[in-house]
Image (cartoon, rainbow, N blue to C red; front, side):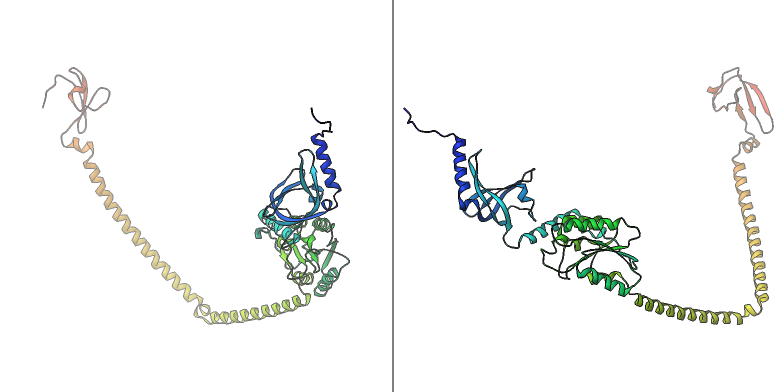
Length: 403
């Protein structure tokens, strides 16, 4: 007989253990470090992987709601530190760590994310030099994408106006920091692309930490710059700061102020350069004029210019001489070709059948005007024609004899 005890189902037991785990204070909020193994990403966006050390492996799951907040993509072999809670999946009785946060150990999340995105975009060809557009030398209309509250915009306007007061600046305001910044920057670039006669776009932000510059290390901003029809100059942070936007842009400026310096030529310097070119052109033209004056003077004093009739008579005499030579040459050639023609005519006549007839030979033909070469072509009694030197005979074959 079985003892009278309560017998639990598998589901009941798993649920009981799950309640114990869920009520445990330590297991409800635990930090664990280890190395990622067997990483898989489901279509739903959930992440499944193992977290291992030298002796054990812990099953982990990170739901899509938490995974979407990651700046980088987890990979096998990556050493990480995670925060979450331990519970049991009642369906199969396995306990696992449900992760809320995941951070890399070493370089840091942002550095890993930067390198991953850089590699991804490089493979897509967004950094190719062949795609870089030419920056205009003398732009007349410049678009600016930056925050309207910072000092960056003031610096760009000040430098641009100082160098050329006539330059037209079109400002497309956008947040340059925070969660909304990438979307606003991309939209601002797209809006400027809708304008006509815009020569170049400056995408700018002041210096800051990697976290503060992160909007310019996003895929959305990178594609907006890459897809821009108008050339884009990236002026983000200080000279030592390198962002994804710098790598995609058609030109990189070390600072926002430097971007204005590079794009807007100084009107005063242009005037001075133009004046130098005018002076140089005038000097060269005067030198050419003086040289040609000397040449004209030399030609005017020459014999041909003083008495052109003499040269003309000489040319007439040369023409007569050349005409006589040509006529004599033609006569000699005609005489030579006539002799050769007579020679070939004699040779051709010697081979003519008429010449053979003149030597006493005759040509025989059948009644249908075919030449007779042998006796088998005719029969006794046939009528044939015998052609002589001047006349012909109509004969009848009386017999055949062998020579």
